[in-house]
Amino acid sequence: MNNQYLVRQKKDILFSTSGVHESEWGGGSGYGSLNISFKNDSLKYTSFQKCGIPCSSGKDFFISKINY
Image (cartoon, rainbow, N blue to C red; front, side):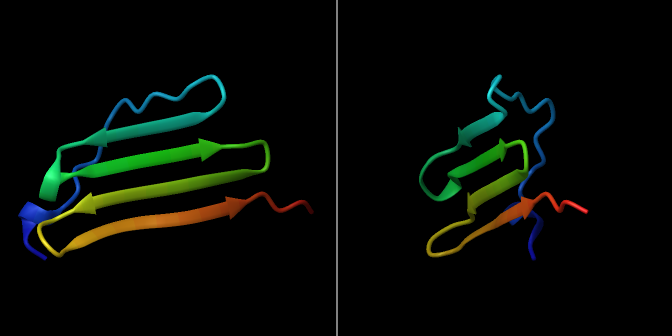
C-alpha cells in the first residue's frame, strides 16, 4: 500500500457525555470519517477513508461485553 493512502491516526479524540465521538475530514476523494460509540455493555467503531476514485477503505466492528 502506498503511504499516501494510509489513514492518519487522530490524537485527542473527544467524546460527548453520552460516550459518542463523530468526526469528518477532507472532501471528495479525500473524505474520511470516524464514529465511535461506547455503551454500558458494548463498543461500536466505524472508520472510513476515501483514497481516490473508486478506492475506499475502512474498519467497522462491534464489541460486546461478556459476562462471566
